[in-house]
Image (cartoon, helix red, strand yellow):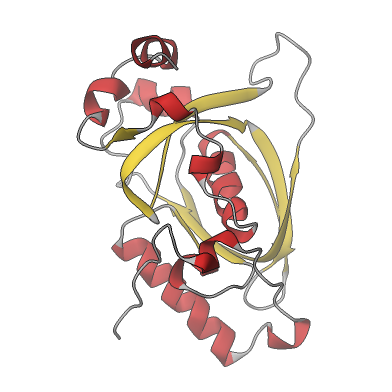
Length: 203
């Protein structure tokens, strides 16, 4: 099966709110085929998430998956710092995202976190983006079964990134602008703390 290309920044479909999937379409062969295509495109890229607008379909569907293989270049310390853990494939239709109330000031995991983020629709670049540490998403899967997921750390970041796509928002709208860099320059920055990167780039 020939896979569709990933839509790149500049296409209007990435900048318009995606339409909800009507209840009568959920569970149909056509919708399952679309979801299967999305999963294949995400894995081929490879990426950890994909929204339907990224293959030119303005529907509220996201797929997400992370594995040890995809994070193999990170040290154990970097994984822990980011809260990056593997999770199996998740399909969420018509997702609703809410930020979970942060713990009291000073508690572990409170608030928000800033890390480098990239996007398959903005290839070759990355930038620092601040995201909430804990979120809850609800929706349904490809069979119409209820999905509810409380995510923290990197899975929460992926969720926020993909739900943003359904709102017509790209990470470049949220990035710390002076941290925007090419992937060729990124390795030198990724070995530094966020504070060091911000100081070096005047961000």
